[in-house]
Length: 138
Image (cartoon, rainbow, N blue to C red; front, side, top):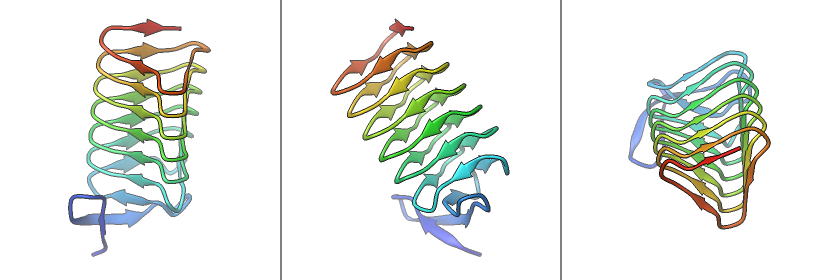
């Protein structure tokens, strides 16, 4: 059995056939999705559809990435957060808690979207922005 250390000690894991990135055996990644060679998917995270996780990006905990969404660079999606549709999370951005990023929205730079925040449509959150609570941006 192969193992990989996602940051809290080694856990059973495997390389995803589409891209070669590490996926914890507790996580689920569709065959149609892409996980790049340096990307990581851990915990109970789920990657659906044609979603892409690449660069040094990490999707963890109970996070969901679906549709044609992209998580790349050194971005992190965690907690119960969701990234779906054609949304993109990139750079050093963080999406966590119960946050949702959807549609054609982008979260980039060092931005954070957290709590119950919703970023949708063609919205862009960038720089050092922090969106939290029940905030809705579209």
